[in-house]
Image (tube, rainbow, N blue to C red; front, side, top):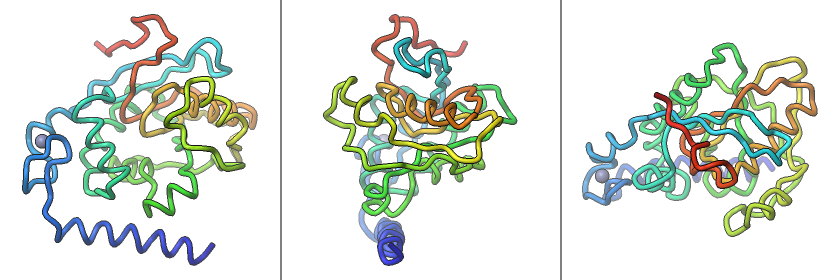
Length: 229
Ligand SMILES: [Zn+2]
């Protein structure tokens, strides 16, 4: 375990060091010699949007705030941060997370991130949501822990995703606390639903969720994806 942790840390440091010497291109549009061009940086200006998790979930009605729509530049930049080790982009995504947390309007709530799987941490060497939260000046409390391995959610349909994550998280030391769950992106809401279930099961009061970006939750009515006025 110790060596694995070390390997992940070294990989993270290496990715950062390489980013300094290798030629870069804008993570949003590919323009050479710049990590993120001005146009793409502007496209990451947050516009908080609120959705509610679907009625079939145990987490029905919990508001989910997101700083950006998961499309275009936001998708490219998030992927570069998650899959290409471009940790320097975290500061450009920090405002979207900060805006989502602020929009949820629970300033005293404890911010609990969805835990990064061991496999993902070994691969990346860092935890995306923790990194962005740190850049946003948000203090997080790692009170959710995985209880088992889950398959990669990509490629699974909505039902498959829900089954894949059911019972996969456990919460600790949360009884009686008000909590906002943090995640990087919300797509079907399956992972958030599982996090909310685990937190409530352990006695927490979940008041919302906040993510950097979101795709509209498909089950909702067409106007369930609102933009904050
Ligand atoms: Zn660009």
